[in-house]
Image 1 (cartoon, rainbow, N blue to C red):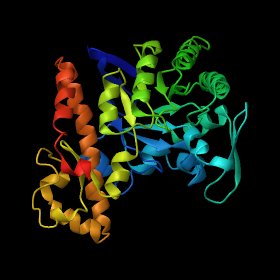
Image 2 (cartoon, rainbow, N blue to C red; image 1 turned 45 degrees about the vertical axis):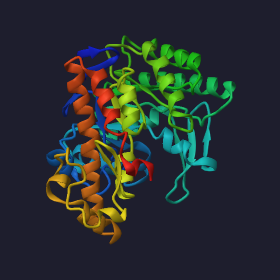
Image 3 (cartoon, rainbow, N blue to C red; image 1 turned 90 degrees about the vertical axis):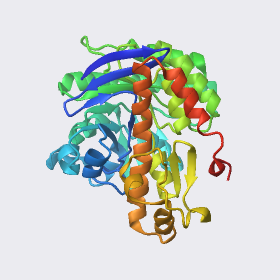
Length: 379
C-alpha cells in the first residue's frame, strides 16, 4: 500500500491511498457491504453509478455464511462479488461484542455462538487474519476487545492490554505468512483520554522483524457516549497516531460526525447509516434530513435535493419515492440507497476539495448554515 499526504488544512487532511485494486482519495467514506454486498445494490451500482473506490465487508458474517473457504475457492471477495476495487474487512470484534450473552472474551480470543444456528466458534487473532486472507481483502483489521460505555477503569485497561496483545500476535502472524494484504491496528480506551494515549502509543511502538502496521483505526466509539465526548476523545487521540499512515474512525456516523472528525484529522469512515436510514425513509440532503414518507411529498415533483446530481435525483421525484416507500416497493430501497450513499461520498469529496484549496473551515461553516431552517429536521 502506498500512502501520501496531499494537503493539510488545520488538522484536516487530504491524502491518497493506493492499494492493489484502487486509488483512494481521502477523506473517504466506505459504504458497508457486510455480506459482500451493499444492501439493495450490486457491484455495477457501486462502481459505475456511485464510483466508490473502497467498500467494507465483514469477517464475522462471511465466515459464517457462505464461509471464507467458499469465497477463497471462488477467487476472493473481488471475484466473488464482482466489485473489483478495494475491500476493507472488519475483524468481527464488533459483531461478537453485539452478541451479548452469546459471547465470551478471553485473553486468547473470543468464543461466540452463531446468530444463525447457535453453533459455537472461536476467534483468535491468528484465525481472524487467516479468514481475511481467504477473503483477500486489501485492508485487514486486527481482532480487538471492544467494550460498552460507560465502563470501569479496570475493564478499559483490560481492553487495551488484550487489544495490544492481539494486535502484536496478528502482526507476527501476518509477517511470518508473508502475504501482501495490508494490516490496520485498532486503538481502544473508551472515552478516557489517558487510556487512548496509552493504547495508541502501545500500538504505534509495536514492531516485528522491522514491520509495523500499515494504518491505525480508532475503535470503540459511538457505543453510547455523547457526541461531544466522542469528538473530544478523537481530538485527544489523533496526536498520538502516525502522521504518515491512514487514520480510520470505525462505525461513525452522521454527516455532522464526519465533518467534525475530518476537522480533527481523520481520513477514513464507515457506517451503515446512509443505507439503513434510506430503507427507513430518511434521506440525507444538503439542507438536512428529508423524511420521504411525509404527506407533503405526495404531489412533490421536485427531486430529493435540488443540489444533488445523483442518479436518483436526476431521474425521479419526491412524489414517486413517497409512493414507492408507502407501497413497500423494493425499487425504493435501491433508489434511496443510491441517493444517500451519493450524498455521503459527495460530502467527503467536497471536503477534500475544500482542504486542497485551504478552505475547510469555510466549508464546515457553510455545511452547518445550510441545515438550520429545514422543517424535516424538527419533525
